[in-house]
Length: 562
Ligand code: FAD
Image (tube, rainbow, N blue to C red; front, side, top):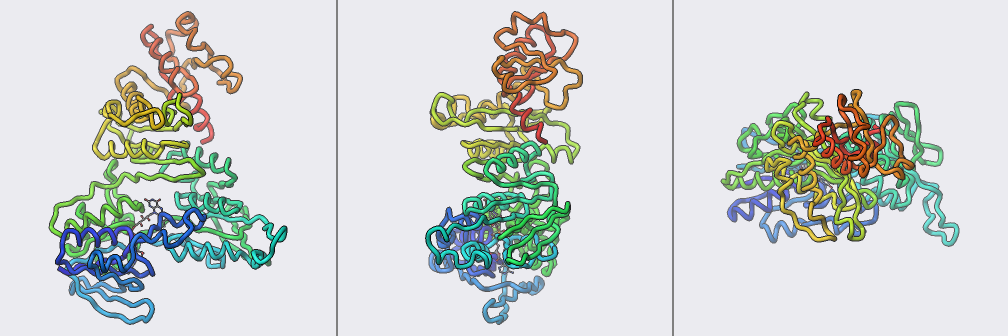
C-alpha cells in the first residue's frame, strides 16, 4: 500500500512512524514544505528566550532518521500543491527548484497544521514584526533581538559602559498561551513587554476570574497586560523602531512585535481535494480520522473534532491530540479499529516559575450552551503536606454535574503541582468519572509530593460534600439577602474586612448561636472555605439554614477583579 503524508511535524511524523511499526510493507512518503521534520514547535518560545539555547535541540528527528530507522521516504523542502482525489494522485513541488512531479497514493494523510492569523492591518509587514510557528521564525526573532534596530546595531562591538543597552520594548499581540510564553521569554531577554489582547481576558479557555489571576500575576513580573483593546496598525518611527496603535487610540512603542493572534486550520489542500469542511472551518473527520473521502485522512490542527465534554465540534490546536490522531490514522490505515475519543482541550502554560492549567469545559461555555446542570467549587489546597518545606497553595476551580456528579472541567493555578492535578482530573473526565471517584482516587503520597488527602481527593470531597448536602455552597455575587457570617479570627479582619458580615470566630460559634437568625440563609465565610465548612456543619446540625461561601476570601479577591 502506498501512503502519502502531507506535513512532517506533530501529526504527520507520528503517523509515519506508527504506520511503519504496524506495516513493514507499506510504501510511505512523507513530504514537508519546510526545512525540518519532527521539530518541537512547542519549544520555540523557549529557544527565543535562550532557555533552549541550541536550535538543534528542537529537532526531535530528521530526514535521515526517518529514512534509515523507519524506511520512510522523507522529503523536506517539498510541497504538495494539488490533489486529484478522483485519480488518487498529488502534485509535489520542489521548493528550491520549482519542479513539479506527480505521485500516486492509495491512502493520503493530511497533517498540514494551521496558519497563523495575520489580519490585513496597516504596517503588518514592517520589519521587526514576527510570528512564531516554525524554527526559521524563531531563528529570525533571535537574529533580530541580537541585531536590534538600527539604534542598537553594533552595540555588541563596544565594551564597558557602552554595552549598557537602552530599554528594549516588545509588544506581544494576543494573550493566548503562545503569546504569554513569548512575553515571559522576552522578559528573560531583557525586554519591557506589553501584551495587547482584544478579548476581555487573556487565555480564553479559562474563566474570567482565572484570566484576571494570570493578568495580575504577569503584572507582578513586569508584563503590562492590556485587555479589551485590539491592535489597529503598526508604524515605523524615524529611529526604525515601531509604534503599535490600538483601536482605543492608545499607542505602544516597540523594538519588536510578536503576532500571536491564534491560528486557523490550513484547509487549502483539503478544499482543493473536495473533502468536507466543517462549520468552524476545519477539515471534518470521523472518529477514525477519515475525511469525507474514504482514502483521505486528516489529523492535527487542521481538523475539526468533537469536544469530549460538550459533544460540540471544536478546533483544538494542541500537540497531544495531533500526535494521538496521527497514530490513530496510521492504525486505521493498517486495518485496526482505533478511534479518537474527542478532545477536552487539556493544556498548561508555565509563567515565571508558576503554572496555570485547565481541562474540559469552563463556566463561560456552560453559560453559552444554557447548561445549568452544574455546580462549581473553589479550593486552595497546598501542593504538598503543609508541614514539609516549600508547600504552595494551588487555586483550583472544579465544575461537575449537579445531577450525577460527573466531572466537567477544572482550572488551576499555582507555583507547584498544578500540572499533575489537572492531568489527573483530565484523565478522570475522559473516563467519565465523578466527584465521588475523585474522593476515592488512590494517588501516590509522601510529604514532599502531596498530602494524604491530595488536592485531587480534596476537590472530590468538597464536590461530593456539596452534592450530598453535607456542605451546601454559595458563591460570591449571589447573596440575595443572606446573613453573612465571617468565622475568621480578629487579626485576619485587620488585614481584610468583609463589609456587612457579622464576625464570630469559629472557636466561639457554638457559644454564640443565639446571635444568628433562624429565618434567613446564613452564608459562612472564612479565608479559603475550610473553616466555613466546619462552621456550616455545626450550623446545619443545629437547625440553621447555612451554606459555605466557596473559596472564601481567596475567591472573593479573584472574583472581585472580574
Ligand atoms: P504542525 O506541527 O504545524 O505541522 C504541519 C506541517 O505541515 C508544517 O511543518 C507545514 O510546513 C507542513 N505543510 C503544510 N502544508 C503543506 C504542504 N502543502 N506540503 C507539505 N508540507 C506542508 N501544543 C501543546 O499542546 N503544548 C504546547 O506547549 C504548545 N506550544 C506551542 C508553541 C508554539 C510556538 C506553536 C507554534 C505551537 C505550539 N503548540 C503547543 C501547538 C502544537 O505545536 C500543534 O498543535 C501541533 O504541532 C499540530 O500538529 P500538526 O501536525 O497538525 O501541524
